[in-house]
Length: 168
Image (tube, rainbow, N blue to C red):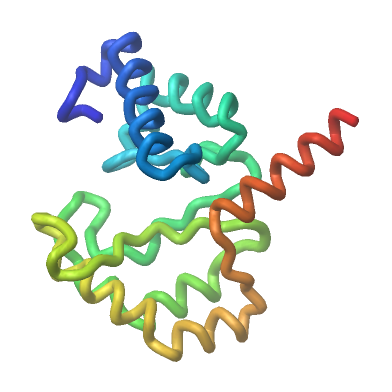
């Protein structure tokens, strides 16, 4: 977003959010299942308010801004200061994160990808994340904790059902 418009210009931000939503809908024939932003730019105003309103209008979750969904960014290959921390991307780190999750719906922040996905300085870490997430021990740990893997589509559908039931 910040590479396209000033994140301080509410009108430009609103137009860009709508343009991106329309592009998504045009390409996939449906609205997105959830909203988020690159480098969490949606956590600052006025982007936050615009994204919250868009999510409400579309009746979908917004990353780390939805009271029904918690966010865990502990399994990530960067330090809090943005420096590479590949040691954080290990099966041990993932299992410790899984064991420490609270109950409820949790989004696990991660950025898996393949070598040709993006020209990104986080490229090697993306590949490492894929390896860890596909490790059989990851699934065993998920199963041992009784965690159910879900898509945002299924979560958004369930939340819409609950809203309809509350209104009825």
